[in-house]
Amino acid sequence: MSLALSLTVPAVLLAVTAYGLYKGVDVFDAMLTGAKEGLGVVTRILPALIILLAVISMLRASGALDLASDALRPLCAVIGIPPECVPLIIVRPFSGSGALAVGAELITAHGADSTVGRTAAVMLGSTETTFYVLGLYCGAAGVSKTRYALPCALLADAVGFVMAAASVRILG
Image (cartoon, rainbow, N blue to C red):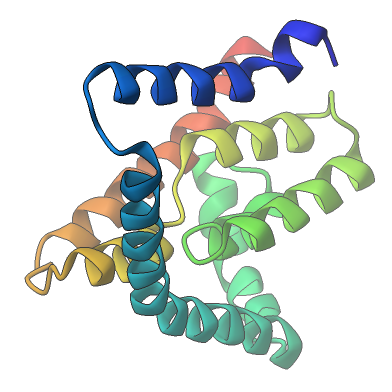
């Protein structure tokens, strides 16, 4: 790691502290207030995160993920998505770390320059952990009316998956 890169965070902290002192702000008190608010957010987010991780683990362990993957393979083949990427499509809306694990398995098994590897990489970069975002961020912000948020987010994910496969096919 370069020296400039390793000094970035300390430089930002120093600059923010200097600016706060220049403006007459009690920097330490402001940091304590921010830490207290951060803990409040964590206490609101943690239960949803624990449930989400438990559900993903149960789906993988029970074989339900494999069944859903087998059911979606024919549709994905028609759309042009490599069938090997179906588990990634299923896991990605729920868990970023789970999707990274599935993506890493695909890239290891098929190679980074293969159609499957490139499609998985683009899918990871062009889609979101929809349920995680809705569950945690809407919960943390106290948003309860999410009627259109879920369908719109899932549609955006579907477009991201299809466009990932199309871009890999087009760009070769």
